[in-house]
Structures are given as C-alpha cells and as structure tokens.
Image (spheres, helix red, strand yellow):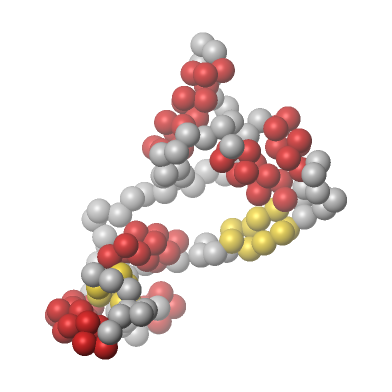
Length: 163
C-alpha cells in the first residue's frame, strides 16, 4: 500500500483495532505515517459474512475519505529515535542505576514496550554467541518491516536484553 501511495495511487488498508499500532508503525517505517486505514472491530478472518458486511458498511466513510483525501501526517503517532552509535553507555552510581537509565532511555526512544531489559554487555553478548558456529557478523535474517539486518551479534544482543 505504501508503494502505491508513494506513486500517487490512493489506498486504504483494512485493519482490526488490535492491529492499528502495527499498521501505523509499518507505514511509518516505510515513510507514510498517515497511511489511510479503515479500522474494523475484529479481523475479517473467521467472521461470518454478515458480520464482515456490517463492519465494512460502518467503515465506508473512512474508505471514501482515504481514497479521496490527502494522506496527512498522523499527529498522534510515536516517534522512534534512530541513532548511528554502535554502542550506548549509561552512567549511574551503581549498576542498578545504570540499568534503570538504560530502560528509561529505551522507553523514551520508543525502542521498548516497557518490560525490563537487561544490559547487553559485550561479555553477555559474547557468551550468547558462543553457542553458535556462525560468525557473529553473519547475517541470519532480514527483519521486516524495515528490512533491518539481523546478524548473529544483533540477535544475541536482543536475546540478552530480553533476559
């Protein structure tokens, strides 16, 4: 949908209420945070035809608006901070305060969902990487939706932070 919008072809994406955050984040990642959405109360999957028809009827005004209006910036979407720094350092009076500051900063940057994170120290990430035969710099996966590069090292750091 984003590619069509970038080419000037209007679109509207149908999405369920519980997936609006994901849809907005994906659209933001691809450069159109105001991508028009028609929001349904439930996913279409496994719903009776009459229920789907009712949800569609309720959203027709949103569809028409999305297809005929300008794609506007979403004033309520969260900003994600992007840094080029390979390593971040957090200072504090003790290790616990350093970890608290890490968690606060990750929330501030939009990188965390609020669950506590463990610090991905070089030693902890190295221990995690030792369980694999691949090089830490080997690309394991391309991460959707932003096409991030998932090396073994990056995935290990993420696993360490998750605990």
